[in-house]
Length: 290
Image (cartoon, rainbow, N blue to C red; front, side, top):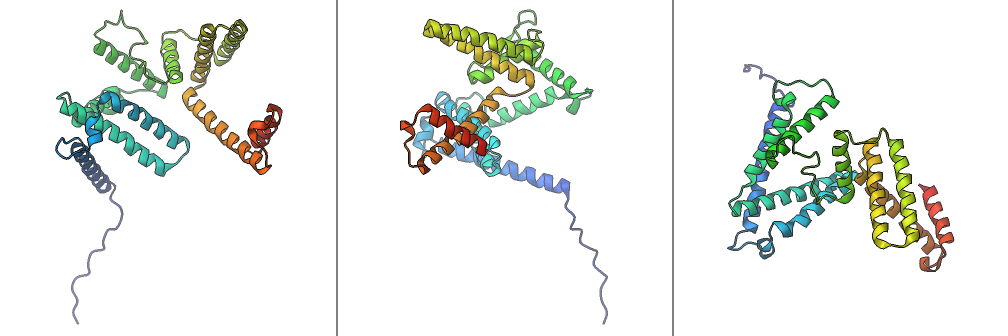
């Protein structure tokens, strides 16, 4: 019996380039699908009544909320939830872009082009001929590019510009305090080290105590604000995001307090009827268990 030529072996090794191209094609297809869904939701003829009623101002709180939910999923290291929350956040960008397109301002492609251009512009060491010697040099170059962009956007000259220009007023207060301090430090307005800032915290706390004794609500609020701003600078100087640190503390406090509630229920007692000394004992037990 005669046989034909031996077939060439099939190459089953993965093709990274092919996989990347397939992934990119799938990403484009899904983005186009999402844009089509958004267009259908905003279609006056058969669209969703709720979506049709929205504008930039009404959607903005949802955008902020979704960003926080992304951060929460990251903090919990929940990858499945992170995927969902990133999708929700992407939908917010699509929603805003669709409303802008309807107004004749810009569309989603303009948004994507804008950020792509910005990233290439801010990374000339990757997409151009520049070279950077270290992470610190790259960070300095990044900030310089951002400063130039701020000046172009504001139309101000370098002489009249402030390093605090364009720090968004709508940021959470603790995060904004961190950013303001970072900008001020870039101009040389900073404490020499974290311990020096800790000393300033003690000073601010003493001033708050004095105002508490005085009883003036406005002055107490002012001193509390000074204290919180200074605490945020300790985080900045230590390389710790104070907003994330506080989120972690909130999760820890919530977890321990729920444990306290469970222990009190197991003992057949009423939390509202217990003195603070007893509650402290339960708290210490929950803390020790961790």
